[in-house]
Image (cartoon, rainbow over all chains, first blue to last red; front, top):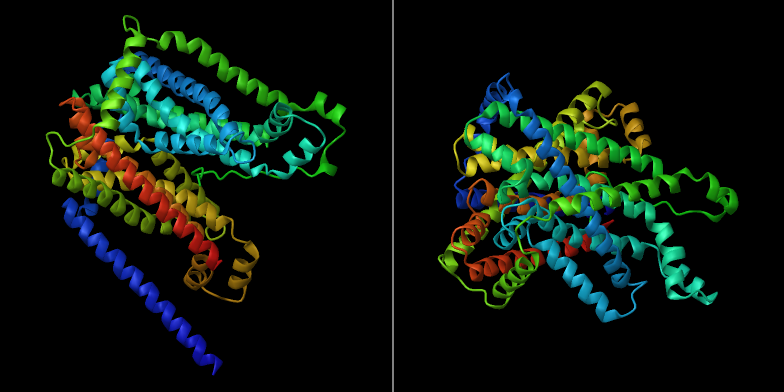
Length: 264
Length: 287
């Protein structure tokens, strides 16, 4: 009797899984039709890789661009770091006022939540294009685009980190007579500091990747340089740009992994 | 919920008895010094960079005023401009399709690479090879992959899908392998000790155990892929809502339409948040 029941549940489960797979396959087909995408094009993945290996290896000619690339890479790095830092300052302020356990006002908390969600959900392309119109083609536009997105992301992340602190400890401290500022600066912030720094480091990494895209759209920094070389068919130099980006991203990842291991 | 892709954040609770004597703690705490140093360096770099970022010959106040004015046009009076509603909805559907296809293909391919990239299931030479190749692919920004493929294969959907899939595979391999590594090693090694083969272990132990984790990472990647799909449309001309956004703001300077497109993107973001909320509740209930 029991055997039969379990057989039935297994059969039901199998039916459900089959149903999900069929549904996903159907959506896949519809999506392919909408996009006019041929799955068989994956057979030519190696074409791209071969093309990459043939054209993108930096040659002796492209070495002359090295100084320009290094300078723009350095600028991109600075823009990523400073936009994250400024955003982190603002986000910390908003997060303290917005987190449920440290909020002064419930309505303000909801407004901050909505504001952060709005900032996060406008894609970086949207920010770049809107800002480009007012601030023209310069590094400041890229800075602002990264700033707005980081502000939205970090506010949410900081808020969740502070909420993990819990309200019991806060109530206990208030029972001993600590005022709001003392609770925030002597208890909450020191304890969440490690987590906040690790979010900031993550955001810097992320912003360096995004800076390439923003640069491409706003005509600044390393993204612009790649676009310039790529469109003028100087593939060796474009390959050099990619190499430089890889070195920077991997270096930042290693440094931030090291720092995180030290502070945790 | 925000997840930190690639590295999940864990906060270890501090047990009171583990804390050293406070006075000693303060003097010898190298962690505190390191954190202060990091903050100081970040603030220092920012303070030195900011003056050089402010462009010469641009009236900042006027620019900010102009920016506020544009935002007002966008959000208060959104309407269709050069493109009809139909064109915009089709473009949105294209971007969503692009995100869906790259996520599905990426997750299937990544699953097999994750099996090769997990210390629990594969020899370490294979793990390090797979993980380094994936780290290399991840270090190249997504948009560059798409640009490279659009030259090699010709501009169009095929190049966009393949370019975006590259990054998805690299990302998902990493997070899937981490999820598999988080499994308790005892159950896997005892299964293989009693002679269960590789594939039965994968289908009967690894997949059921890691499913909630894999699903939530896949969903996060879908959100990232949607953002990327919009970006690819704008920067590589691969079509979709991103391309319309690029044309409306960069060529027609039509902020009414930009506003409408941003509203459409926000609507989709809200729908995604609701779906992810429901999925999470369901997965939590089941486990």
